[in-house]
Image (tube, rainbow, N blue to C red; front, top):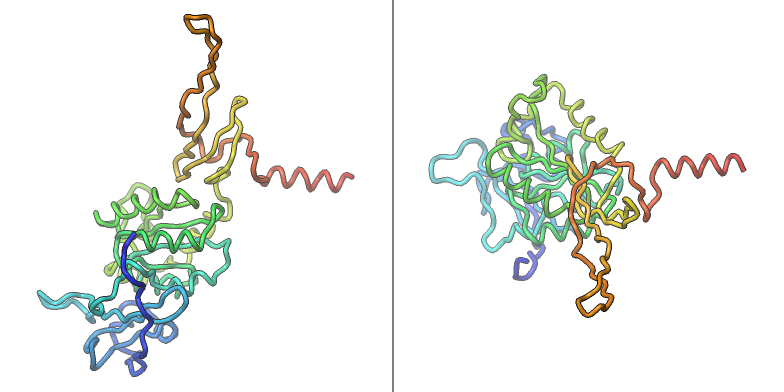
Length: 312
């Protein structure tokens, strides 16, 4: 885990920002969203001639401002500027708002500021941005702290090489304590199997989302996918063929099971009875396998219990 003291809250706020700058409109943000997030064009100071974006910690205190160059910068000029000494790996953009959303809503993870603000603007308010394509140990701990084994997380990173590599790493790490779904953003009207367009998380992704006519439908599908989650979840205790196992990972394709093998009894050369316990085996089953779940009540069991109560 990253070392060093936490980012300290700022003792000032940038209040005199231009909220109606054309670049914000170009990125598809409404004035309401701009005001809500406190972003705007800064005319002078450390973020002069940049779009200032406040970054808050989980407690809601501003710990830094990020400065986005409004447009394509000249060669040698970075798109983003962060204060010296600020450790972005210790923060998740919009985490202070996301943790206030209902626990049964999925948490969406994107790369960049504008991706998070656009999703928030379209009603997906439980969203955080990594401010990059990798998940730090501190960020992972922040997510773990505000989720549980029943939580759902959607990873929506860019469709470039960094985004693909990042989302695979994130999915593996977060699947240890919650359900994770990797979601690609496909161009409106494209059938399955066609190339995915760039994601909404990164800096270029915000523009891809602009003027997309089926955005509402896209985000509706995101929520819909979790109204009927997979039957098996991480940490489920199951019984198969008389043996007990535990679900240690779940993804779109399979549930990974850790199961003890049956002990073996045999006689030594000195005719002494010995019991040997083989190491556990790891295998995959369907995420909707109709195996017995011992440590929680499934929907089918709840319905059966309800009917029994009505009969009695």
